[in-house]
Length: 188
Image (cartoon, rainbow, N blue to C red; front, side, top):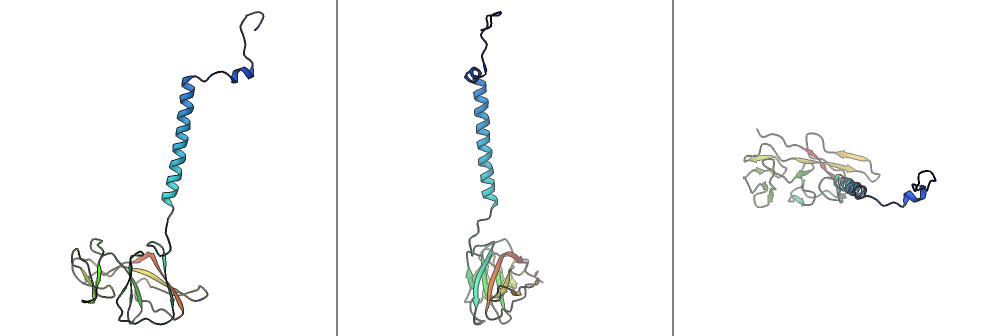
């Protein structure tokens, strides 16, 4: 208390003990909840943006393995459902054909009794190597890029831009790049 005014003055330590007003409390609570929301949004955005590809999944490289002997050329196409492609060996080489029809994006199937791919939805038909036969599809089937690596990890063969079958050297490890597609040739 001062002698001339008779008013009690609060010192520095006493000011820290004063109570928060309701308005100050609500402001702090609002800022804390806004900060928590922003932090959660940042974490969710980061998790959404990061790819979660497992080995062998569509969108990433799929290791077919080491080629120690040439497979038979007349074998039915091998299905890789998780990676969404058919592995086809022909006399000219190998192709990885994307499992989605070029018409409306349906999933087509291999019909061994007819020796061709047929889309069950609209009837588009494709040869064993993916070339268009008939139906409403605007082009042949799309392919994925195939890469072959030697024992040291050096690239020895890769699918060209035209999507020609790839001759795979013996002793090479084959990887299908499911994130890289080559569009099929338009129908004539």
